[in-house]
Image (cartoon, rainbow over all chains, first blue to last red; front, side, top):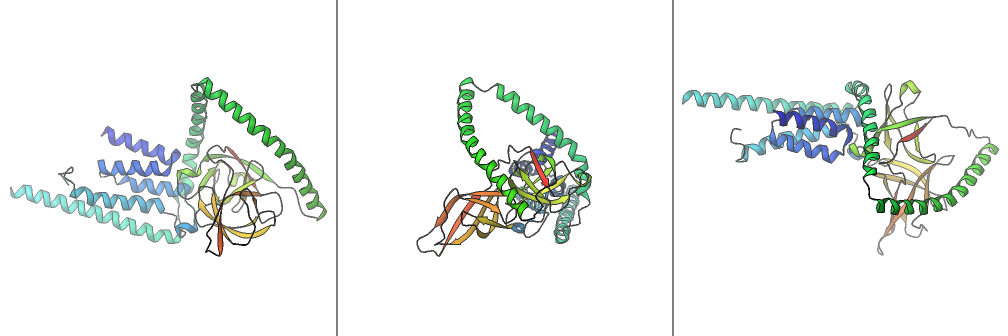
Length: 88
Length: 265
């Protein structure tokens, strides 16, 4: 429980002050430790704060929402196959 | 036994429903991204997060000062000598620069162009490395008469981006180096008009025919009236068989250390 709260707070600090790849790494750790649906919310927050229409991303302003949602779905199915997660 | 398996089945169905909801949300958000102006959270989040950014920056500055005190004397002496040498080089350049700027203003006045820029100074709250968008946040917004499209200048002459979104007390600045963003610039001493394409992180690229004379260190400026330094050529890639040469250049401003910018109207 406390670990989840700590990672939640670390993610909150990361999306405001740290590099995007640190944020993504914390998200991956969070997803592997818990079924953390709230990462999609963090993706939305990141995009709402900083996103703008950029030609390199085809004008899409929800890059992190899409990325974190994809990671969520991928880790969900990956964890089912891993022996470390017997209860899933 | 039967109860255990039925509980398992119920649990499986519930978790599959949850995944289905997530996938549905994902698709909805993807569809929403086509109408990218619809984001009611942005304004609210900017209002809520602005004080957090300000406090974070204060702590960051204090921490930098504190850790500076822990630096060894040897390191400090070496850094002092290096900075003094840099300053000596820059002082000479600065004198020439001031003469050129003054001459530029006089010529603009002779041509009857408006030479006075109205600007507002903004503090950088969040730097570009936080996301992939190559944007940063400043603490001025609608309240300070900042408008969409206003140009953002660092260290007096270096043009780094423009305002892409304005909120009440904050604004989002998109750097010219945002991936795929194209900007008309003037390259080198022969003033060649080219299109610079952003690569992210303050880096740009453009292509020129092989015969065109360009050197590393040549200046690039915005295709506009006034002193608007855009970047400096860092590398030129030309293969013997190719008809074009790829010019790589970057904005000389160190975004990690930038604290204040000017928003020019």
